[in-house]
Image (tube, rainbow, N blue to C red; front, side, top):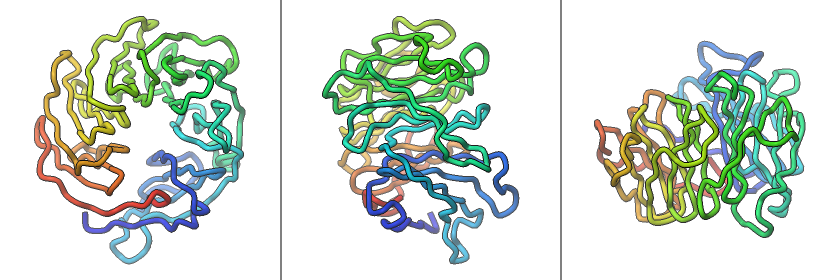
Length: 308
């Protein structure tokens, strides 16, 4: 890490950044030389669109440049992109953290981030403090190419964007506790879910799921899941451990490491998966991947809750 650039708290009106989503390109927005893609961030009542600089800020210019903002009436806690439908798909609540919903927003250049519809999630348990999670399934193609997966308390539902509001295409109890994370595999027609008790399940979406095809467990709530290869899954938890699981077998983790002793909030791989970045409640770290294990930790930066 030669350069780490931090946004200003006022860019998000001083509120916490809830989540971000990255895309190498959006139709109608600049791309090519000098451009390194786009990032959308969400905070209380606000979306921001950031242009990523291809030089990574080495010349003194910011790595992230705020290009557009969109006011909302919600807190967006999880989001994903459906590139085929030009939509940002969000799981959100109102400003008080109640009334969970799915909201859709445009990613067309002329109407970027403008609202495109909402759907109330009425099946969340009353009083639950676990926000819904969402994952777009268009990557899989076929009959679920227009669908999204959303968690409601302990359940997962598969909803069709073309008939939003109609009964779910599939619905099942995924964990005996609240679902705290959803991740669509990059390599197969599989969905991974994590629970508030540390449980992790793999689901085959080529048919209506009833039981997981594999499951594993950490000691505390799952906060992040990422596919490393077609047979390896990475997980992060409030227990502070980052674990690597072989998805072909339901055994102990293939590798694990304690990041810094603080709860893990998020994990992300570099584009070629040669590094994994881990965000804890204390800071940002980077680990080179070495076969099926983690190499020496690289300390990157301390983080504040209203920056990224």
